[in-house]
Image (cartoon, rainbow over all chains, first blue to last red; front, side, top):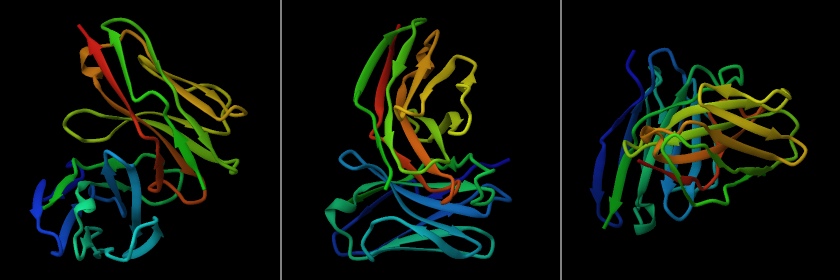
Length: 115
Length: 116
């Protein structure tokens, strides 16, 4: 079956712009999480969505937001981009949030560069 | 809050040899899972091995095994018979039993290079 699909793979934006990234989870998976990966801060949890509701949120400013659609696809949005938002954004999906489903499957990420 | 520490930014190993990557963590929780993920140059995170905190037996997956010391909050990964395809970044990760499967805390990673 198809894995987690993230689009686009690469993106270049200018400071002050906004950006929307997309994630399609594995078919049947209903939990989607987003992570930011930077050389300085490593991998940090952004937020998790399940059944179109934000279930958990990491320690990021309000410029970072997300949503999940009824088909479990998720988008994340970053407004008023800053240079420090340049990062690899990873999406992960799992069947449900319950811990019996302990494996989260990751996409290949979207590389965002802010200039 | 949970923290995960990987104190070895880079390591190298000769092909066919054994290498151990270190990870320590801090938590006040009693029920949790620990993971090792591999991130090759393709950037896709791949689960290598997982360990349930309530299990005393160390997890093993083929050439990969862990040494889980709950009291010491230590979770190291041993790779035996290292192969060139093992070259990658390796991340140790923590999952709180309560927050669930898709909310992971990661260490800063160890870059492993397997030398032919």
